[in-house]
Length: 72
Image 1 (cartoon, helix red, strand yellow):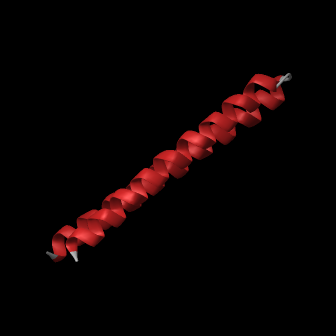
Image 2: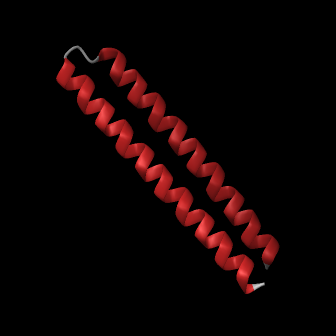
């Protein structure tokens, strides 16, 4: 059971890493084509929101790990 949970958590971590990488690349590509300061500001805001979401995802991930560890 613990091995299955560990494998699932590893998979979730890998998926989050790939998702973050993809979103970063898309934002970078968009930033290269942004021509106005307003467009660049929107992209920067989007990037900061993405980082906040990523932080929340990792925080949830570690809380889950802590919960699993305390149950065993």
